Image 1 (cartoon, rainbow, N blue to C red):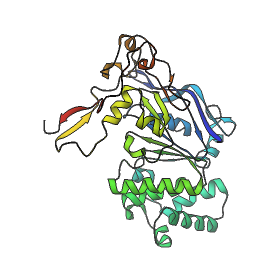
Image 2 (image 1 turned 90 degrees about the horizontal axis):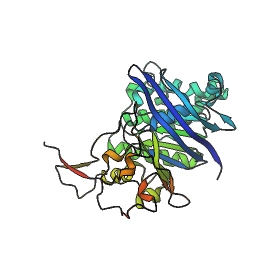
Image 3 (image 1 turned 60 degrees about the vertical axis):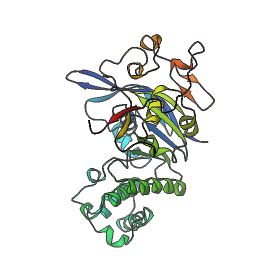
Image 4 (image 1 turned 180 degrees about the vertical axis):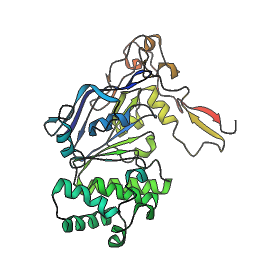
Length: 341
């Protein structure tokens, strides 16, 4: 399978008044043509920062400290902003969390879809208009001619997200980064948007990086899954590897936190504790302080990536040959919390 994108040992820091925040710490992954790679983890794990770095849209206090982002024979960390503008939106596109803030309220949605088509593909206004109407229809919005002339406030949240997807697909990108595109939507619309992305991927062949904090969202979408914690990828493998044979206690906790039909009306489940301060990352395994399975070595040395199979890797000392044999317990990582307290 053709490899489109390679991220190698990516390190991203943010300068703050309090010190340097090490938001992404040595992240490595690749993406193949036509596949969906899900990057999952709690808020603050570094998944969105890693993907915004690919687009080179970090805030002014963020910078790439180390690493490579290889795409189409170029290292995107080294090219100029002018050259990056030719990649951004054309070859690599992004869908953001909130469709209302992603759209310009003063412009019709037709003009917003036409803009990248004219800029990157050199279409005439009339040809761009035709293409924009085709895209509105492609993302499942009826009466495209009428909708073309309307403004974002005239659309529902789900329809606005469809428009954002249409804009991201306007130039037939090779890679589409979806940064929690369903977070601001209700569950019914969420399911429709996920199905739309899956359907569009089959029609266009675009490779997708799907960022989410919810493993359940990607259960039927992802070919491969990378689990991030404290700025690092701590486990990755195929969707089946992660869902049916997880090895890292943090992945156990994420799976255990997924709501199921047997949860009582007043019971929620969570991973105890909070993620570490990345101004001063902990020594050893960053998840050790929250893990019921931490050993002494977890507090002293950072675990390497152990190979579970040809497709499955995990950074946990539990995979060391001398570690105790601990199987994933049922509901591991789940802690009952009464929501009325």
